Length: 274
Image (cartoon, rainbow, N blue to C red; front, side, top):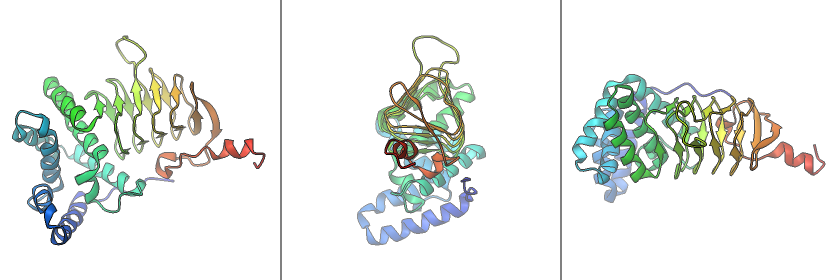
C-alpha cells in the first residue's frame, strides 16, 4: 500500500472554505469560529495560524504575538506548509472519524499539536531556541502533547487522539507514520547526545507504546498497544509485550496506512487455524 499523492493546498483550502460556509448556514452558533479560522482568510496557512494562535494564546501573554509567530512560518516556509497538507491528508485517509478537510483544522488536537510543533521546529532550526521552547510549552499546556522542538518529524503523519504523546530531543520520525495516544519516544536515563528512538517510514505505533533509548523501529513495523520497546525492531514485523518481542511478520508492508492493530497472524496460530 502506497501513500496517496498529496493534494494541492489551494484545492484543499477551497474545499475547506466552501464547507465552512455550508456549516455556518446551518449552525449559526459556530459562525464566529468559522469566520475567525476560515472564512475571513485567503489561504490555508493564514487560517491555520489564526486557529492555532487562538488556541495556544489561551496560555500566552499575548495571542497576537503567537498568531504572528505561527503565520510567519506557515506563510513563508513552503516545505512546512506542504508537510502540514500531507498530515491533513493522512488524517482524512486513515481516521474513520474524519470525513472532510475542515475537521482536523478545527477540532483534532493531534493534528493541531503536530502543526504547532512544525512551527516550533522551524524556529529551533533558525537558532531561535527560546521562542521554540516557548511554543513547546504552550503546545504542552494546550494539547497535553510534548514534542521537543529539536525532534525531527517527516510528513504524512497521523497523530491520533494524541494525549500524552512525548518525543524527546533527538527523536526522529520518518514519513507516513501513524501514532496513537500515550506513545513515548523517550530516553533511558540522564545521558546526553543521541539518545532517543528513530522511527522509520510506514510504522504503526499502538496506544500506550513506550519506545526507549536510541533504538530503531524498522520500516513498516508495527508496535502493539501498551508495549515497551528497548531494542531495535526489524522492518515489517509486529512486536508486542513488556518487553516487546517479535510476534509475527506483517502481511502489509505499510501498517501505518492500513491502521490494522490486530495481531491476527499470531492469534490464528495459537488457535490452530493457520
